[in-house]
Image (cartoon, rainbow, N blue to C red; front, side):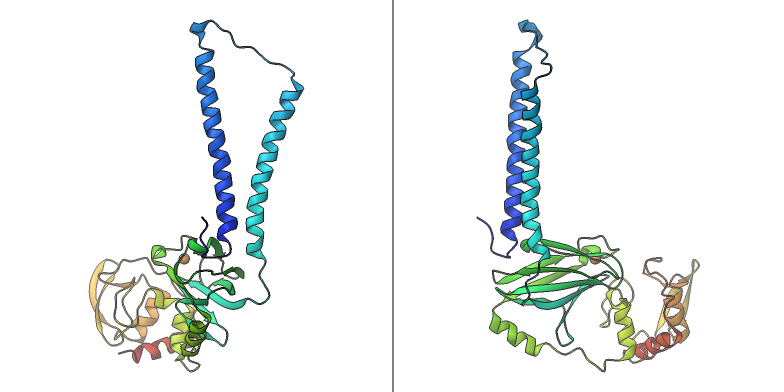
Length: 303
Ligand SMILES: [Cu+2]
């Protein structure tokens, strides 16, 4: 009856079913009683209703029974929730980083992946962090959901019990492309996992510094590196190209150079490339002069 996708399915689903069951029971009983009384005490029948006053037994009953029921509903919810916050010590530790608008996973040894690959029947601890705004880490099939909060470490954990691919959703509205912020958990066998870990490329220690700055600031989420159109213009071949931009309402042609790139970072609304909406990008004023220079250097090489 309960899916074995993760160790939390039973606790969450049983609490949900019991609470729904209790609610449906009272809905049916109360509605039926209400209809029954409406008919029974219809004025046309001439049967006047009676006022009951100071009935201690009745009052104790209607306080005690609902209290027991709601405490029980709290208890089963609590019982399903507590294990989610108690991580087994032998859990494999992986860090999930949310940024506008993607998930990134960091494995021990500085290994980076776009897909969360995990072995079956092993406890997996996911450290959650965000580099920009609030994001959510939700895996409906596993019945887990936690917030990814900037500057506030959070975590989630699970043991997957069935092989397959499962969706990860960002559940906190995080801006324009929030609905595209999706991820995948791939549950594989231990052997497959070990093999995959070996092939996972090490985060390039000597990846260009400009690229690191672009990644750190989340630029890549909106500006692709391969020419594809995301939210803003692609970075590929941008340097030295001619663009039509809109400057305070009037169009003009510019050549993309250091000055234009720098201006577009610190004051993105000044010259907006025609065909792209204005006002979507916020100014990145915290970048230092040397950061801006490194970005320029990097984009120059991106043909
Ligand atoms: Cu998000």
